[in-house]
Image 1 (tube, rainbow, N blue to C red):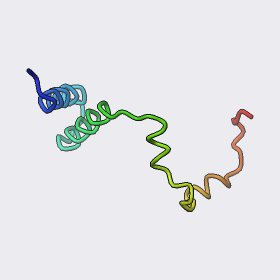
Image 2: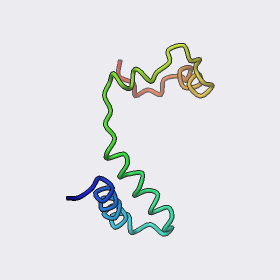
Image 3: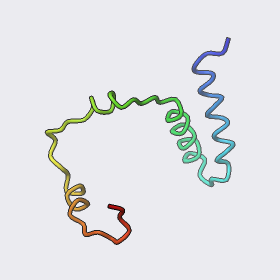
Image 4: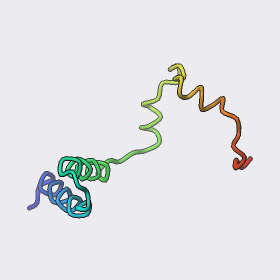
Length: 76
């Protein structure tokens, strides 16, 4: 019987082969690992909402984005 870890390592190996055009081996392994972890993540709306803090102040980046003028391609 194949364990979860064995399946994960097999998937990681497949992803490494997929990204074999990358020059940096460490970056290649990191991308493959992240892709395999993301493939196994399951999200649901309620879980994501539970992680939000509505009282959290907006970041400077968010404020800049919210106050940016329209660029002309917005659909209203």
